[in-house]
Image (cartoon, rainbow, N blue to C red; front, top):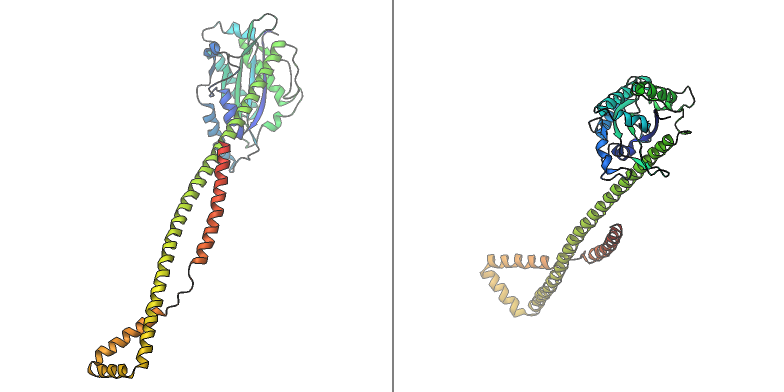
Amino acid sequence: MNNYVSFNAKYYKNSQSEGEIGHVQRVFAENKNSIKELQKNNFDCGYSIIDKYKDIYAQAEQHKGKKLQKNANTFIDGVLAFSRDQFELLMENPQYKRVISNHIDDFMQQVKAQTGLEPVGWAFHADEGHKDPETGDLKINYHAQLIFFNHDFKTGKAPLRELKQRGSESAWSKLQDLAGQVFQPLGFVRGISKDMTHQRHTEKDDFIAQKQAEIERLQAELENEKNHQNRALQNNMELLEAAATATDEILKDVNGAIDIINRMESKRESEKELKEQILKNIKGGVEIYNKTPALQAAAKAFSGQFPKFTEGLKKTYQKLLEFFNIDTSGDPEYMLKNAQENIAKVEQQNAEVKRRLLKLK
């Protein structure tokens, strides 16, 4: 069969959207299956498919009135594969890209009418192929990848459940019929019947085209997973770096506070010694006064002559006694020791964080 058109698809979760749709519209820097000199033959719907997908995702959540489940299959990547001989005949028309584009748009709208799947966008790849091992000729795998969102905005249901039914009367089989009908004016006929997962091809080119499309999907999934892991690793590294930096600042502040406490403790010891010496001198003076009658008589005479001055002197003496008898217990030595032990633990933990961070880098 040299003029077939076939349609098959695979469904994906939202977490796979960046990688899979990015592959469809070739947003990645490199595509291993692409033949560079043929890339000029590619064309698409004319807008960002991933941006349109995100818009429809938000609309679907608003339509349902709740968040979509994380494990839900949110979109379908359908592959329209065209036989090489018939498509290369079509390429003789200078307007073939516009003609194909119109038919793809029509096909997607009819898929929506039949199934409720919401069209998102499409891209046509004419730069992928293989060399025939017998002749050495380059055989291009002409195909379009169509993205549909798995939400019916009329019913609020997910149409994919019905599409998963198998058999000649399934909705999926009817989409094969639809592909043959829509592209029949361009000289194509319906491909061999198959379901989504159990398929056989009698045409070698058809078999190779489907296998190549599957390889593309797997590569896109691997690329998406790789990007996801890289983003997670980068986020963890940034978090560890921020934690290590913050801990360093905390340790710096705490160590500064400990230095201040140490200086205060040294000053406190000096003050304590001075107080003890002054108190000792005061007590010694009192003892001498009590043992010396002549001194007592002189003090009495002085008090009688200068009563106000003597009264003020007594008050000052009392304040000195109160000051130098202040309880100086509760010193910060225990608190300081405890803080230093905790700091040692934090420093050890922070060193381990930095060690692991170096391994990640």
